[in-house]
Amino acid sequence: MGVRVALGAVGSDISGLVLKQSLIVVAVGLVLGTIAGTGVTRLMENLLFGVSPTDPWTFALVGLTLATVATAAAAIPARRAARVDPITVLRAD
Image (cartoon, rainbow, N blue to C red):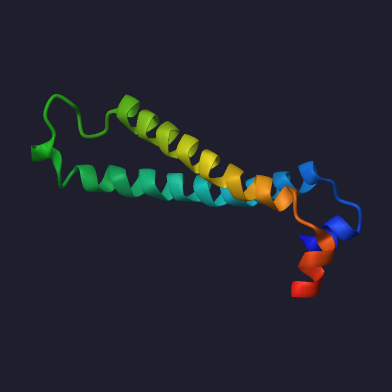
């Protein structure tokens, strides 16, 4: 990050990079989690009351909630990375 800032990247570039990397991990996790969740629902079908095992609204709501929380959690380090002092980071490396 320090090298990028030293070479002219602005805060929005750095925060965008951190958010992009974080949200790629979140997207992969949501896809794999949805696939695994769909597979596990067949095993837990007798524990579900009032909901079908593959209810699309439930999967969508859970995915949206997790994506929102993950975006909020990624925004804090992204904002912190945008304010990094390049001299301090380069000295630490």
